Image (cartoon, rainbow, N blue to C red; front, side, top):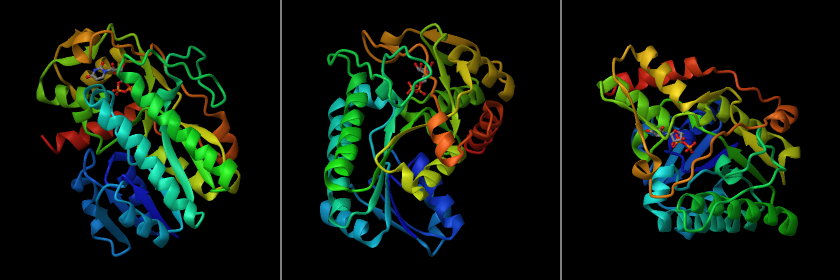
Length: 321
Ligand code: UDP
């Protein structure tokens, strides 16, 4: 199979590329290196079945040719990371909405199957935990920058589903919950690489708010397996799937665990959200996926536990200090 991955030198995209190469497929990626890194594809670049284009998905002729060359498309290119989103809302909205419009239009020409990556952010302030795919999405005010990410991704979802209903373009939507593992950088605000790097450097660990907010961290290798399973399954088309882990932990406990596993003596400091992000920033107190739907369809079960993930992330950053 010839697989196109937009955002293929990003954190998740590069792991997905490696997994397809391992399976014996041919992989094409396009990435503008805005948040992705060439380091992530160093290993893949040595494989003759790997092809990379450094460009934006918004360069239509380039993208259209890649889509024509491939059998299926994973659209992972997007502006990600809450910090980046709050700091660059124009870029977030434009990248996420235009990019998806262009990818779907190009794929529609020859009806190439597209999997569009959305995010658990779309559940927003919903209190219906664990979140189910058919549950309500609860957005905050448009004056709060954070919600531009959720809304831009919700539009991507609507568009992907509309292409299926109206034009019979086979599309699949996935909502990725907090995904972590080696190659994820803390540069865009993600908590695990940020805390691990702080612990290794002996700097204070920054817990935002009171640290009682919870998340479930899914291992990138498990997530990649789920993405491949959905792409291979005919019945996934026209549907939305949560992908993530359901092992819930508070950010305060996470910081403690990282300190223990790194053997660090760094202190844990609490930083108000208004200082960490922006005035009036709203965080979600709990985020837990219901993963029953994808479990039932493709047998997905998160295998890697948080401690195992943290050990890998610590090893990855230890080598890079
Ligand atoms: N967070 C934190 N310290 C950091 C970075 C993030 O306490 O240095 C918190 C953040 O406020 C959120 C959680 O960790 O409650 C997860 O943040 P991340 O950006 O990784 O993902 P999100 O769940 O917000 O998409």
